[in-house]
Length: 79
Image (cartoon, rainbow, N blue to C red; front, side):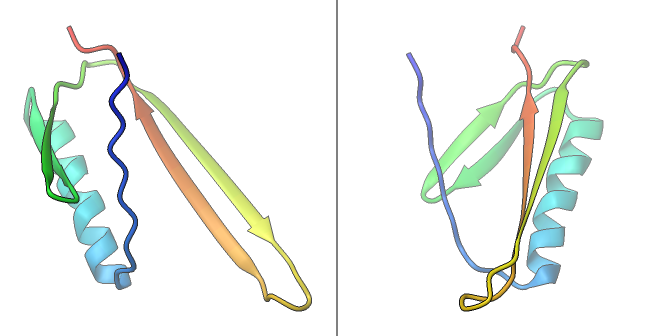
């Protein structure tokens, strides 16, 4: 069974950095932590070994303007 919960919102740079810092702090110090996505709290149990993937896309378009996207993916099998 797959459960996917997705959220997208526009935030300022400081708010995005704060969210990433919160996740990083939780990875460093806790066996499990909770991430809020929309109106749902999801408890995660990361292992010591985590696959970390970075995907960067740079688009250049004459009429629509340039666009840059970065996607971060962390993947593990909870014990």
